[in-house]
Amino acid sequence: MSTPPLLKTYKKLTNWPFGHWLFSKAVCFKAPYFGSIKPFITLLEPGKCVAQVKNRRAVHNHIGTIHAIAQCNAAELVAGVMTDATVPHKTHRWIPKGMTVEYLNKVDTDMTATAHIPLPHQWQDKEDLLVPVEVTNTRGEIVFRATITMYITARKG
Image (cartoon, rainbow, N blue to C red; front, side, top):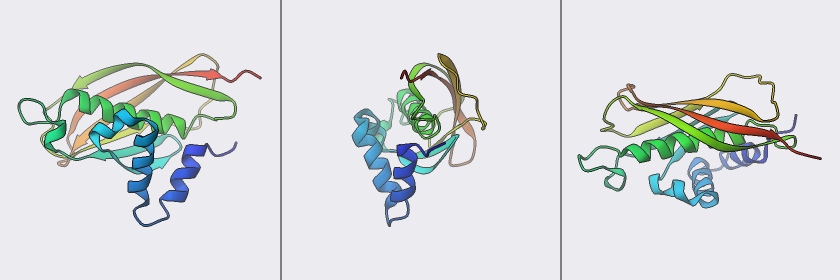
């Protein structure tokens, strides 16, 4: 199986000084809405992606903690980047189909979002891949959980 292009780019860029920062910026250039949370992707490998989001005023709600939708954005980011780096790009494609979330506690520190699926995986056509995401605060407490449904289809021809 060949390495997906996104994973190749990650491996190349993260060998450079400031490579993780540059890769994170490139992801936000490709999908601009994620730039609103200014994610910093710290790990990407098949089946796993980790990103950090700083606790700053631009992502706050009215009570001074990280807004619920900023948490959702972080979850969708790591799930999507992980999926893109994992699904065999020559035979399959994907698109987000749905998300369920649990807000477990206020996020009053920086946060780390982690998407992880077990591998190996048998890729099917018209498959709902459930991607679990956990968000933790700097104290290591899980403050948010999501399950993102990625719709996987086989490429035709």
